[in-house]
Length: 431
Image (cartoon, rainbow, N blue to C red; front, side, top):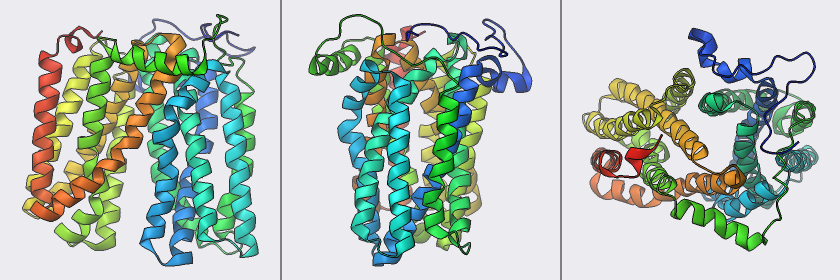
């Protein structure tokens, strides 16, 4: 089936209901209700996300217990994130050249084999920190391919009016996994006869479930039948489509600046918990949990409002809320108001997810379907770049303090976002 074809329900499945505007609970979960293939895709993706988050905990636990070194722990995290910066644009070309389902199947198998290898090494008691580095790099490479393929496949699984809802539900599933996965992984590590090796072996039932769900979907994500250009030409066409587009260019600029400035508070939470509030590891865990809970709430709220025709206006509100929220967080932390700061972190988590969901949707709605993979891979690369800002902002925090750093970043982000959305002529024409 071609990439451009609409989903045709399998036997016994209901057809997507185009143009129907449900209310209440059904409106929040519209894509799951009206698009059976997306529902199947989402169920399989959840298993993969949950196991992935559990394995992040297991890898970090092993990295530190094997070496007692925070530097090694940082290197393992770097090995996971680095491929996303380097390989994402290349992965986008792959997603547009080959069936997306096939790419996802290959990635899931490589992830499973890597995890099983780590489980065997852990079971035999011969695992070393450099094994973790190799596994982290392989996982990061797989994620760089997996994300553009999955993101660009979703529009083929849902009616266009449910696209924003589907993206919001994707984010809701990811945020739920971020909350449940680390907690479950931490508990399972302490369970006798399970431990870290059991977490790695859990990839086997997870990948079997993912394979089962993917093979229920007849839509392969196959590119159209036109003659393909060279790999490098297609790579350049993805970049050119963004730079030359009067709609995509401002959306990507907003994404880059907002992610670099707006995610800084998440990277610096340990410094705030231990150095500003003196709340210890318990306070740090609570702060992280509030951000995660806010992100989940933002995903579900965006899912409810996904049918709104004023998506650009919604993005303006969300982005401005993020900037003002950072500013207020700086003021509250400067006054050492821990409980109000927790509430602000909840709002920041919700605003971040609300903003990213609507930006993702606007990019897809304004992109040629044949370029979905390449455009989304570059968008994913902006997310990989965001953690790099933590170093200069951390230095800034050491020099002038965390509260003032947040006030400055929040003020700059607010002015930039309001200026772009109010006065940029192309942004004002986004539909």
